Amino acid sequence: MTTPQHRFLIIADGEFGPLTSKTANSCIRYFPERIVAVLDRKQAGKTVQDVLGFGGKIPVVGDFERGIAQGKGATAVLIGIAPLGGRLPDEWKAWLRTAIEQKLEIWSGLHTFVGDDPELGPLAKARGVRILDARRPPPNLPIADGRAADVDALVVLAVGSDCNVGKMTAQLQLRDALVKRGHRTSFVATGQTGIFIEGWGIAVDAVVADFIAGAAEQLVLQGAKDNDIVLVEGQGSLIHPGYSGVTLGLLHGSCPDALILCHQATRDYIGDYHGREPWVKIPSYVEMIEIYESAAQPVHPTKVIGICLNTYDMDESAAREAVAKAAEETGLPATDPVRFDSDVLVDAIIGARATI
View 1 (spheres, rainbow, N blue to C red):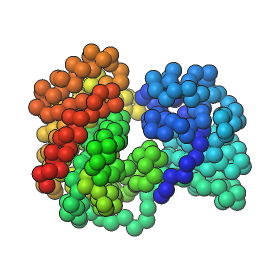
View 2: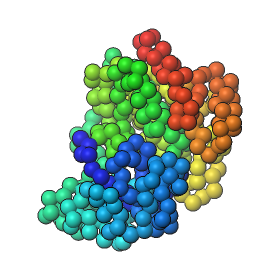
View 3: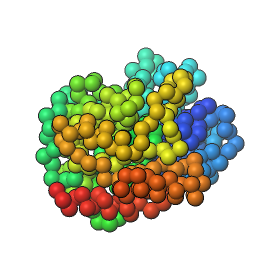
View 4: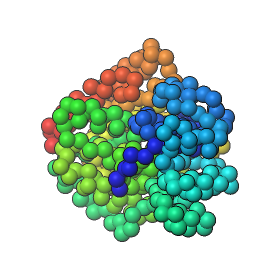
């Protein structure tokens, strides 16, 4: 899949915020120049900078028609949050109908495929409008057989203490830094947001369980073509009560040579689990490292080579203390690659590459 240079109106109605609109936020971080507005009636009148602390003067609007008319006008609508229950609200359907009638593409990462909607799908086909359902898996995925371990490139998988701790962002930041140093490096997208940003990939959480590892293997084989380093986007966490299966499939299928452990420094428990109070306590760095390395060992032994922290909700002094503490406790290089220099992790990856 290639990424057309669209101008997007992002729908994040009622949920636009630092932790509640991951897809919207990442698209704003990595291609802000292509976002004309964000639709959220709760935050209307603000800028994305006001809400997120980055992104500049992109307006937050409360009216759909006004949103698509911002700037030079949107050419596509991107769904930037998951509505409650994963189903399209009737109001959203009306917005998407309007967009299709105006020949705007629809980009969606929902588990419910917009293209399968009995009204919107036929309307888009009749109008010649593409609906990109990024979570729709490709056909004929293989069962993994360990071929990812045979690539010549260094394969690095981001793993996490929880969901939404910055695994994708870490890999994108590290990819950009490695490329700047002259290393042929690919980023392998395994979720809908990474696909929107990179232009290709497979959303592995929508793949039938038997084929998750096979999808990861296929992605690594593709990412290793003409590259010396492959950075695989992580998903979920091995200790997450709902998403650990996806994490394990990625770990075994991608056969990583090295791992980067990602953690939000202020988070002590697996985050709010569908409205329930958190109850799964996040282990120490050392225990998390042991969990991941032990799980990988029978299929393809690997080591955690660095710690990537998300410190967005800490002041700078506290963030630097958290980074120093992670490095001290693990004996590994640590940083927040968005907030601080990523060189220590880049050096670790380059060093690992030299040993294979």
